[in-house]
Length: 355
Image (cartoon, rainbow, N blue to C red; front, side, top):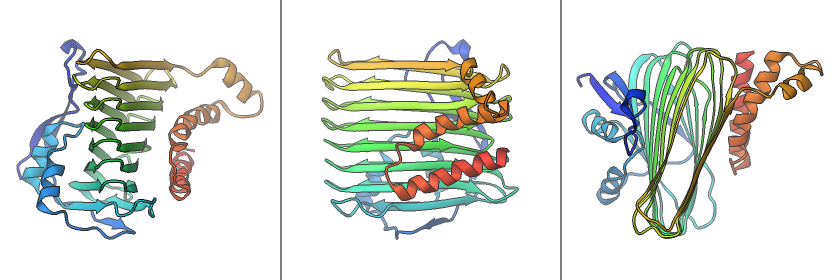
């Protein structure tokens, strides 16, 4: 396919264009196949109706990713929840290799009254370069629960585009934990449509950017259902010459009465050379709602640093401890003991390599 220039991670409502924060651009995109997925559970093929429903779910990275998928025709991996009790977690492992561009699509469905936990582990082989695109779409039927844990720890030569879209019916619960531990440039888009009454989504993001890494995020919770509830919590650290842009939107649609939403960000700035940008946005088409947003952005507390260094901890290791605490905050929301151990190992390997 021909190379494409894409506009991704667009804000639902544009702000002052001079800031150049309304969207991101990605040039020269031309996926060459899909990454192999290693899994502990067998996949099934979605029926035409299910596939069409998945296609209609918008992702946070924007419609350009759907158009790319239509032209590139990447592999689709489909998983469907099967039981009313929590089942064995599905562990999906993807490894980028060589110097190419790839695209994968993962469709997840939880039928009524079922629960499913999925662990997406995106890494790379040594020396890998290129671009890895991972699109995940989820449909949650009435009173179902989906827990998704996504870990990104590719090498410095790999760019990553992650696009997530979810649709929640009445009483459905979607919980997302994301950790960004590597890569070069990363774009992450996420959108949840809370269509049903009393549906909910909770999102926990952790990251630590080093050298000249960049992370561009666009997270949207759309409240259609009455008494729907959302939480977007992002926490991370920026060091060296890294940069990060976070867009967080709570969109209260007319008719979603007594819906509640909260968005909060915590950013640790480890020197003066980093670049941090944040756009919190609340859109209100319904009056009878409650939405809040807040941000805590700054350098490490000098008293904390003094306490740590006075006990024989080097300043470099003290900063690493404070940065790791941001990742541990997201890790705390991984429910499965098995997955928590796997995630903890990925964090330890990340800081082991950094040392």
